[in-house]
Image (cartoon, rainbow, N blue to C red; front, side):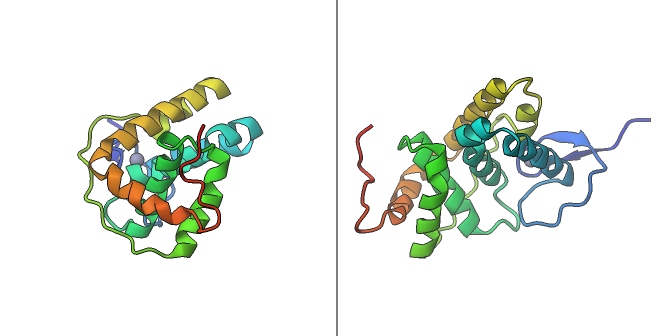
Length: 176
Ligand SMILES: [Zn+2]
């Protein structure tokens, strides 16, 4: 008998059904979420990996699971997270503070129409990595692919990102 499978509404990954039910607002399957939490566990146990990619993992997973009940605010914040690293060369560890500033500035949160579902890596590809180095590489690749899917909104996300920078600390245009 074939094992029943679940298909994730966000990333499209098909996995054997049977995970503990997911009750959050991400547009995800329980099985996809379960794999994601394993990816996070790997990152929490490895300080170097955590510094290199953890926030990228969080932001990429979030925006790959937009739609459904996922609030605009969350999608916006995580898109800005990707923008800061992938377009502005911020270090991954610098992003959470910037995102806190963004939320504190309380801009209005636009609704971005969902991008088409091109094929991209998923958290489950990261989970298969055999080493920390491969894990970090996969997260970078995954983040690039998912960010590219949102290209129609890149300029709007860049505008939203301006709210990350306080009047005194306006280092948005810093030089590498
Ligand atoms: Zn998924």
